Image (cartoon, rainbow, N blue to C red; front, side, top):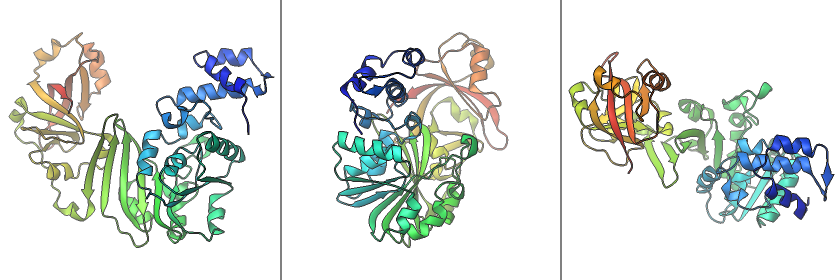
Length: 400
């Protein structure tokens, strides 16, 4: 596969142009050795992936096999996290190559990577991109990965698989048995051929059911990117038993990590705030999306001294003294708001958080004609035992 200099010059020249107008102007036209339609596809894919696939698109010659790859591909930041599990000098198999974001990240640490992809066009583009990115330790194989692994006699240090999670009508699937390939059935044979099996799964996956579905599961990672839960990463090995569930929140300047020891789950106790007068001063904590995925099972109250949950159904926490290194956002309480105080906030700039309050943050914002944009927050919630009492606090966001 080859692309002319004119192809990339067109992409660069028209990157900020209206692509609908470009398609009308260059409809069904080919010139200078390239298809204008394909070049416009590249413009749209690069725009959609801006900030997501920077490790690849920083190279002007990198090509997308289809625009949908920009949406479905693993982000460069999460691919780097996946690659952190790859022992240096190891032999790796990626059974679901796709665009190759994970494959390229693996190749920086592995001695060799075999990438399986069933779509011939994707394979052709992948081989081209390997040349562009100078990745000589990647071998691309076209075919069905389940058939390929059945006929393969080699063993690998790591096997990585990201099963297809789309059904008919582009519906989303998340149970292992509904995905392609079915890793629940396949895991038995895969564990015979690798030391570490890594399975990228839907963030909707029930964590409690994972260890029962995947033989040898010993560790689970709930991965969030900039506060949005993106996936559940399952690590399995022959004879493994689930020990840890880790939550990972990848931020611009750091990674928030929080670990729950499954073997100690019986000692976790959820402490509910009973004295609401304590809310006059102190700190409010909002767990990141990965931690919220674990549910309110008392682990946070057990892990951080002095931390109390506001209500069993309010996923916010309180402490009188500052708890550092909390996996999420921290707010310093300025005041408990009375009804008269709330009215005075109208037309001000203040962010709103609503948890178990009965009214959404959007509705509160509309009622009070409040706009966001400062470090000040109005936090609405129910606190105390049982159903809880509706309350509002004015707080300031802390950045640590």
